[in-house]
Length: 447
Image (cartoon, rainbow, N blue to C red; front, side):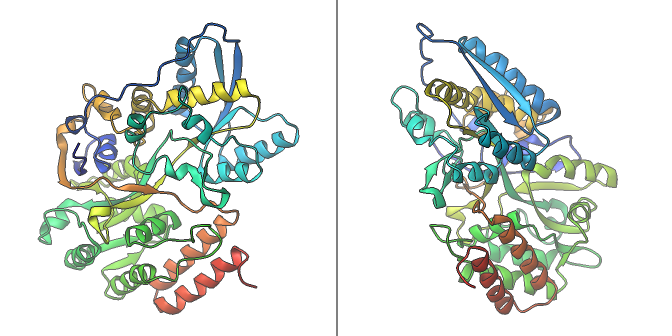
């Protein structure tokens, strides 16, 4: 199967969910039927079991989780699933830690990577490798090959023996937003594939009051840009910084050069950066696939005829495309064999192509199964035509995760300060040296 990267250009449309599928090459015309699912265990001699999970979803997404629980019971009648919402990941983590002390944890959570890593460090979670590799309960090779590239790997935590503690459910990615009209005016017929092309496009699109790149220093975005340059944030064991690399310096030098040449600039806030792009004041902006709906609304409010699109971020090596993949995934608490097994069956069922497609329809996330969009072809999200997708290059980008070590928030803060400093005139080499020292101190490597 020839999986390809796609880009979709959008002209004042509704929520462009189809663009998320396009970003990872997920179109019905390119993918075959979903692989055969692992058979459902017989319910003969199965004892009834009730399991509870916590999540942070609201609105239609919360309603969909409740619908999943109801529909799952039709397939696994001996298992009852109950959902309990929390306000955010921080609230979920705090209550989870308190529940651990009382031995009253939920059976599983749907949460971000850092709360899951925290629970794993407390030895509260099941190593899912045992389920994944189980001959009767696990995923076949065909099913694993149908997962979004990197979706399974980001559930492994290098600092915890590379064990699998989270299972794919909800996927988001860092992406490049571009103004197609400004690109054409600058003699570019497609968004840049490489960083050299990106620098050239930013400079060429800068004219009069229009700038090439509006920036907001976001750590997750920086990690994606660094990965696409061939770099890493931490070493394999997550015990020391690897920011002091040629890849990081290349990225910082590009930021510095474009900023000094007035082709790139820092916005006053994250919302301002998005609005500057939506108003047609900049050709490029890096955001996440979460931002598609917000950009659509901002473009509508601007009242312009802006033609915009979303694409995979530029790459040092386009044949080995990489971006940051993140989202709310599933982690199972250590309880009893029966409850752990029931939680795994629900997690595995949620990751089937049919349920992945249902989740993407309401959450606007990227399906975690490559075959899921083929199930949406007859009724695309919000009626958007899949025919609006244009095939540009090969291959499919692979997702990598953000740092999940204990002091990851301090690393994020150091990255934001680094980006800000370089964009406002600091020497890239000196600023990077200070950041490497700061990150290593956060990791306990230097005094």
